[in-house]
Image 1 (cartoon, rainbow, N blue to C red):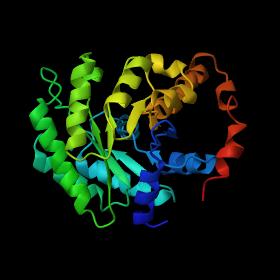
Image 2 (cartoon, helix red, strand yellow):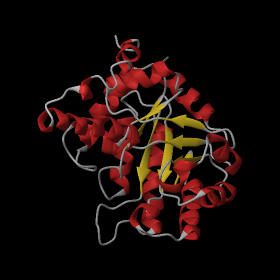
Image 3 (tube, one colour):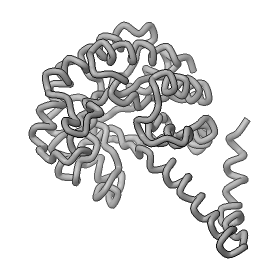
Length: 271
């Protein structure tokens, strides 16, 4: 599938009230396995990718991220969208340049956050946040093969629980031309429903906290169009390494056989 076809396919997956699950691989191998399992699209994870570099989230450069996007997009035949953090810079120009470059990697889309990287003021003031989204939209529209732009309002991840303010911000991102809207960290299904009811563009929801107790049908009823896992799969996979401590502490090797049956499944999807 060529990039333009992937972009069109990816956009067509977004249907309010009929959400698809978009898992987050952290390398080419995990991407191929997830494609082989039947997922229709994939999303990179900034925290999962940083783990592969031995770094914390937000510990990679734009060049690092773009090389990773290129590798993941080339590894599979389904659409890939990318977590492009805050565009790797504070200005609208930074957001524009990141999307321009990302559109050259084979991606079908990507996201821009309104986070600043400054703990004292973690989210950009709304007018600047909107200007950054508008600049990203301009770059997405100029991409030769198209590019699905997701605009993220990050306030809930930083402890700001003003739902109305987040919805207002998403509405302004929509007016600026974003294709998909995303407020990671929504606390419960009523908040998901409120967001979906007050915007007209597709809404992506992060499976986190209380939302993890809900089934896909619940997100459908709330009006969501896309469900993200974030770094959950990567952290779970890396977390299994903790079991290796038993080799040192107990001198036993059961940890090596605990998931051995899964090896046959994995090998089906590797080249």
